[in-house]
Image 1: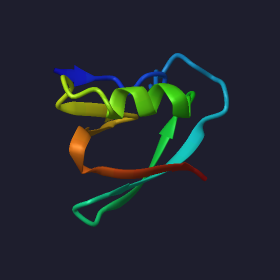
Image 2: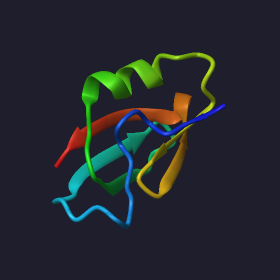
Image 3: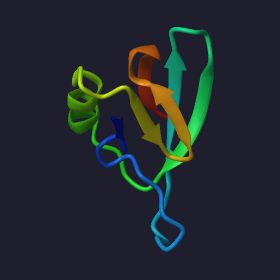
Length: 73
């Protein structure tokens, strides 16, 4: 199952200001991703759901267990 990461989604039709997130992984990557909205509580629920294998954040897809930290920039 792939999750869309709660409200951390992007659409080309939205014109609101984008939120930058810094995502660090256990494999050592640190990415900056832009999303339309971000809700830390919803993201935590997604990350703790053991039925989910992958989470899409912005245009990136991450293994749920590889995500170490997500911080707004």
